[in-house]
Structures are given as C-alpha cells and as structure tokens.
Image (tube, rainbow, N blue to C red; front, side, top):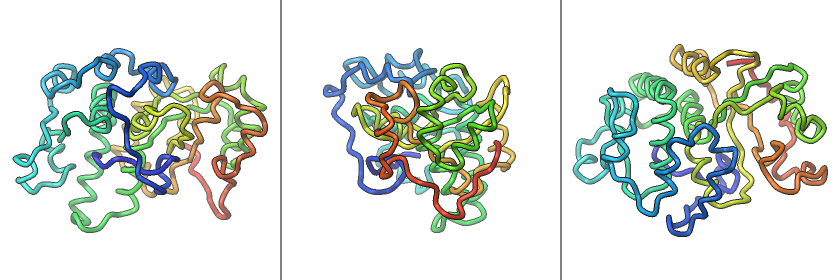
Length: 275
C-alpha cells in the first residue's frame, strides 16, 4: 500500500508519521535488526540521491511486475492501486521513503507481495472500492506493519498470547538468541519508514509459523494465497518490537512494565495458533 502509516506505535492510528528528509537520515539506522535480510538493497536507501524508477526496476527480480511513476498521468486511469498491481504496475512516488521501502519488500519477497495483491483484488471484486472487509484491513495491516515470527517452543507462544511481556522478552532473552523464537522477516514497509527515526517504540503485526519450516516466508505466502490466514485484523498478533532482546536500548524489567507500550491482553482476545 502507498498510504503512510500513522502513529508513534505503528498501526495504532494515533497520529501521522512524517519521515525525515533523506539528507537528515543517519545511515546507521539501517544496521538495526529490523533490516536483516535486506543487505543487498540497502545501497538504494543509503546513497546520497534517490534512485529513479529505472534503478528500481533494474533490481526487481519478478519479470511480471515493474515500478511505474505515480503521477497525474498514471492516476488519470482511475484504477485502484491494487488493480494496477494486478496488471503488473506498482505505482511509486518519487523521492518518497514509504514507497521506496515498499519497493525493497517487492524486491526481497515478491511472492509474498503478489499473494497480498491477489487477495486484495479478490476482495475488491466482491466488495467494490467503497467498502473494506475485515480481510482487506488485515491484509493492509500486514502489508504495512507485518512481521513473520517462527516459534519452536509452544510455551513461548503461550506467553505471547497472554501478553506476558517481561517473561517473554526479559526472562527468556536467551531463547530469542538460540532460535526458539525468532523474527524471520520484517515485511511491513511502514515499520521500515518509522525506523528512520531511532528509538521509536514500534509495534509489528505478526503472523506466526510455529515450527521449523525451512522457508517460513514461503509458507506464509502460500497461506495468504489460499485465503487461509488474514481473515480479520484480530488474527494478527501485536509484537512490541522494542522488547525483542537487542532491538532497543535500556531493556530493564522496568522498561517492560510500561503498559502504554507493552499493553495488557484485552479481554476476549484470542489468537490463531499458526499460519
């Protein structure tokens, strides 16, 4: 999606985030673990100048899709953003962080992005462009703020589902390092945009793969294509990313007690067990 995320906590809708100017961004922010897996594309965000459409298309691995400039001429066709993608055209604004990060996710995870688009178009055909189904909202939230997490130990998933944040992050810090629970991929481009400002307390919207699947991203992509997941926003687990060991400074027990960020479980909230 091209609409920028809002709020200090990505996805909670509080206030609009305004990205810093390119020249004001410290390239050190791209060393954060949130950008793991994107190393081969980071020159596009660290170079002094903005890449143009041709430079983006030169890095696009999927021949069926290309980036096109989102200008008045393009918008005159009256098509929905997702409908253009279904035609192979990804509308991209010039000198825009949000759309540049969207391009990086397309480059790194094209099958996942295609699956999201296919489902969006399926719901558009059923609902029209004026209304949005719960599934469309979930697809958009995952597109903007999505994180794929692999969990090998069901006990850790139980802690997460109860929002027992201090035990999940602090008491079990070593489990985040040995792979019992791990972020496999950050696929939400709004999260990447907000990481341009170091120290922000971001929240990912997560899909969980609960075993040792050799390619968790492919599994999630297939589940999205089949319509087996993301039927409603409540299916997405919130994950306070600053709580992950090594992802934020000052991770004391007192830090994890901040209920405005590490929010208690809402009564009646139940999460799915797998992708």
